[in-house]
Every structure is written in structure tokens, then in C-alpha cells.
Length: 125
Length: 125
Image (cartoon, rainbow over all chains, first blue to last red; front, side):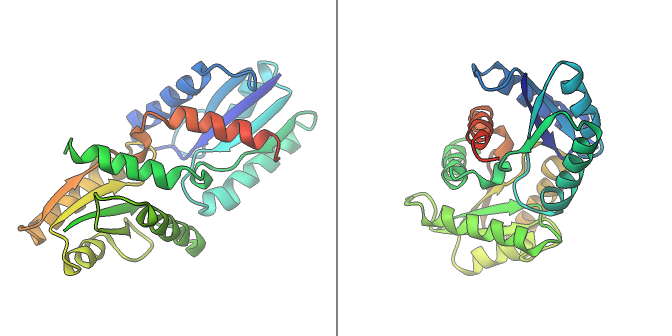
């Protein structure tokens, strides 16, 4: 069973963490043959933690977990903290195939998306 | 003259800040009649600061500045820090029309984009 773990930063503001949970539901609702299970986890300040996110997927039957860092730039969280957490997850779950996707900020469409947001907001604000 | 100020968090890792600067150049390179000037600024840890970003645009002739928060969720940075910085900019530049766009995380296309990144990465990792 193939699964996706969306890893976000986490916030002291619960509404912000709920946004990530809602987004994860929306991604899950997209028809896809690629992932049987999709969950989110938080680097800090919110639950589930990254280890708890892996356990949730694996306890639900995932044999593969693909990590998607929901981050905009390759700061220390993307270059160091998440790789460390992935390494720890591999050590804790040696029979599970764990990989890491591009982080969101690497997506080629981002400049176009930003321009769209800016132009669309001109009539709103 | 209309302008766009992309506000990012800022990182201790300079390569991460450079990513934002590169992204800003890519947004600027998109053909658009909507913005004559496009710059980025950082909430913390990198230059230009938000006040310096406003000054750069205004000194270059901007009469309107639209702020685009380059953030994924409405944590305290989006709900409190950036509004405070915008309020301070309005006080410092009372003749300039300053507005704020949606933040990136509000874009409706994000769930689809995340699924695309995840699926495209399956063959890479």
C-alpha cells in the first residue's frame, strides 16, 4: 500500500494547523491511483509529529511512504530537519520504503501562480 | 506606478533567501501589465526588511504597493506580523496606496499542485 505524508512546519495558532489538515483532506479527495493513504504531520508545535505520522500510515498498512515537504524554500527545515526525521523513520521502520518528493517551493509553476494571485487580488483589496 | 512586494519569512540559510530572490526575478520576468516594479522583502533573518522593501519600491516611483505574503498557512506571521508591518508602512508613507493580496496558501490550486508534485516525484526518488 502506497502512502503520502505531507510534512508542514506547524504553528502555535491552531487554525493554521487546521488549514494543513483541511488541505490534506482536499489532496486525499483528488482521484488518484497513486496513493492509498494520505496524512499530514508537523515538524513542531502541532500533532501528529513526524514519527507519529509515519506510524499512523504504517499501522494502517502502508508499505511505502512518500514524504512531501510542504515548505517554500530550502531552509534548514528542508535541508536538515526533515532529512534527519526521514533517516530516523527509516531506522525505526526498516521494512518500509521511504522516499522524499520535491518540496513545494521547487515547483516550476510557482512564479505563474504568484502572478495570478497578485493580479486576482487587485480587484479584491 | 503599481508595484508588488513579495514578503517571505527569511532564513538563516542564505541559499534559501536567494531562492526567494530568484523567484522574484522569475515573477518579474512574466509579461504583465499589472505591475511596473516587483521586489521581495523578508520578515526576519534576511535583507531587505519589510520597511526597506517598501522604501525601495517607493523610492523607485511606486504609488501603489501590493503586498503578497509568500506563506503557506495563516499562522501568526500572516495574521499578525505582516498586518502590523503593513500598518507601519501606511503610517510611514501616507500618500502611497498599500494593499494586501491573498497569501499563497489560500490559492485554490494548491491541493492539485501538491498531488502533481507527489506523483511526478514517484519516478525520481
